[in-house]
Amino acid sequence: MKVLDAKFAKGFCRMCVDGFYQGWHERNGGNLSYRIKPEEIESVKEELDESSEWKPIGTTVKDLAGEYFMVTGSGKYFRNVEIDPAANVCIIKVDDQGENYKILWGLVEGGRPTSELSSHLMNLEVCKKRNPEIRVVYHCHPANTIALTYVLPLDGKVFTREIWEMATECPVVFPDGIGVVPWMVPGGKEIAVATSEIMKKQDVAIWAHHGMFACGTDFDIAFGLMHTVEKAAEVLVKVMSMTNKKRQTIEPDDFRALNGPFGIKVNEECLYTKKSDIIGEV
Ligand code: 2HA
Ligand code: ZN
Image (cartoon, rainbow, N blue to C red; front, side, top):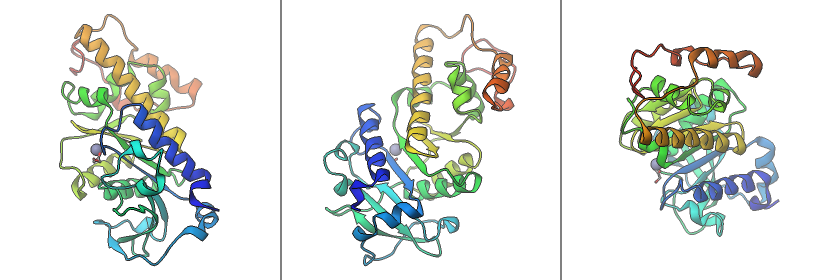
C-alpha cells in the first residue's frame, strides 16, 4: 500500500489540517508525531527507502530503538499538509541504540524532521513506559492557553485547578492534571527533559509563553485533549476579562464526586483549599 493510502497517515494529515483551522499553527508553528504500529509499517513497506543516512537525534531514546514514526517537518507549515503531505511530513526510523534517526519516506522537497524531535521522542518514550498504547504527541500554539501563562502562576496545580473549574468535562478528560514548563529555549534537550518529566505522569504540558504539548493513544484522543484544554482556557480568559473573582464555581468536593461515576481519580494535589478568592491566587 502507498503511505498516503494508509489509515494512520490519513489520520495524521487530518489532525494537521484540523489544528491549522483551529488557528493553532501560525506560519510553521507546532509539530506532530505518531509512533507507528508494526503492522502499519509493514503495510507500507513498498514505499520505504532505507538508503538514507543516519543522523543524531540529540538525545537517547533507548526504549524506542528500532521503532518507526510519522513526524512533521522542521520549518514546514501545517497549512500545507492538506495539499502536499509528502513534502511536509516524513516517516523516520530510530536506530538500535536509540541515538540516531533516518528518513525513509516524505520531505520530498528536502528538509528534516521537526525542530522539536527530541521533545517528541522523549515524550513518546516516557508515555510508552506508562502506557504502551500512547502513540501520539502533539504540540501547538493555542492563544488562550498561552495568554493564561502571563497571568496565572506557572504552577501546574494552579493551572489545572483553574482550568478544571471552567468545564466539568475537564477533570474527566485529564484527571491527572496539567504540568507547566517555565519559559525555556525551544528545540533543545533541556526543554525536552522538562516536558518528558511531566509526561511521565500527565498527558498535558504547557510551555509558558509558547504553547502546549498533549499525548494520546490515537489522533482523536490527542486532538480532543488539546481542544478540551484550550476551550476551557478560552472560558477562563472570558471570565477573567469580566472579573478577578468568581461568584460560584465547581468546588473540590464536586470534583471528588466525579470519581465514582466516571471511574477516574482526580489528582488530589489540585484540590487545595484556596485562601484567596482572587482567580489564580492560592
Ligand atoms: O516552529 O512550534 O516549538 C515549530 C515550533 C517550535
Ligand atoms: Zn512551538
